[in-house]
Length: 502
Image 1 (cartoon, rainbow, N blue to C red):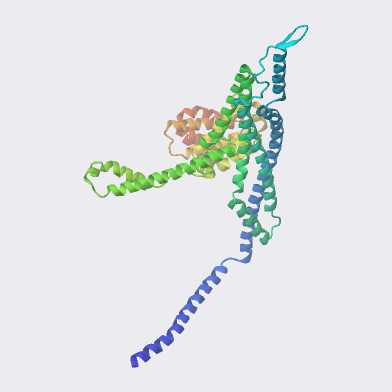
Image 2: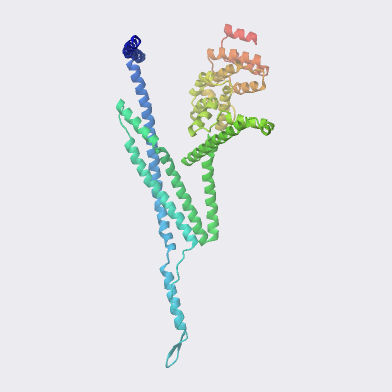
């Protein structure tokens, strides 16, 4: 009895203990939340929300604007194409029904046969035609096979064209409703809600399909045109068929090339659709094959005598089944992978393209600033790009006289910095290093004017370069002699020290 009373009293206090523990945990959670909220100021939070909302707004507006422009272009083309195709269909559908001239010709033939059977004499008119023979009987009409194919192709083409135009009108209405104005936080939420709807309901996929429908309509129209010409004239049909075949081959080539080469610029919705289907088929097929291989490998691990004979083959099968999946990347992910692999080349060509497209020497002056941000092998390639541009632009490898007169400092200074970066490389004993350094050195010349900075840097750089590569010793010495003897550059303690080391 005493034990029962003790237990009952203990159970009476249990809810209070549990409640106390829960209250303590809740207080701790509230303290953590308050601490996390106080880590950043209100201004910092507002800045983050504003920048994020602005980024989403820019993306949303660009997406809607691009889709609207595509729909406008598609509607214009679909309208013109449908008008042209309707004119052809008005004439082609008549081939599917008997013509009025066919009945007239049959009646005239019947009348002619009756008249030819009459025998006219002075007292009577006699007919030699058998009275029991049937008169004019209209034979059942059968449309030619070519006419059936022609109308099937052309009317299908018209349906595809009108369908693309109709859906394009719907898309423009959807995009109009998805447009959100304003920069407030509530507007940002509404904009994100609309954007999520566009992505969830695959509006982009519909936009991608519409040009494919128009291209398919064009293909069907050309196919029907070829069918019509083969029924009219063989020579004309052969020439037209050859031209259509060339056009179809070009369509197929420019559609498939972006699927195979990520840097190909012939991108289109059809190419994206082919790549998406190929990616899904490849990834799912590999996943299925790996699953089957896993089952076979697990079964082989039971140690049967026959399986042990081919253990090496089953082990290779297991390695294939359990190795990391190499899924085919998405359309955008493939581009990002290529950019990552060639980031050095792309970074280099940014600045060299800026110069080659504008011929503004300020971009040459900018090049030494970014040399340290480039991989070491990209520095001589910058000068290789400049050399290729000069050959194509001016017809010879060296600089034209006008450039030396207008700016005799920028390119020599750029070349000196390039040689300095070459001197910092670890492969200075290789022929590749010598060739790359020679490419840069060809861009250095002693202009008609120089600065003390250029003279001191040239002395320091060329002396070090001549020590590393004795082939350029004579050229470096002659260049320094021109700068100090003819152009009047003054020596300093550093230049004398470098000269002594040379």
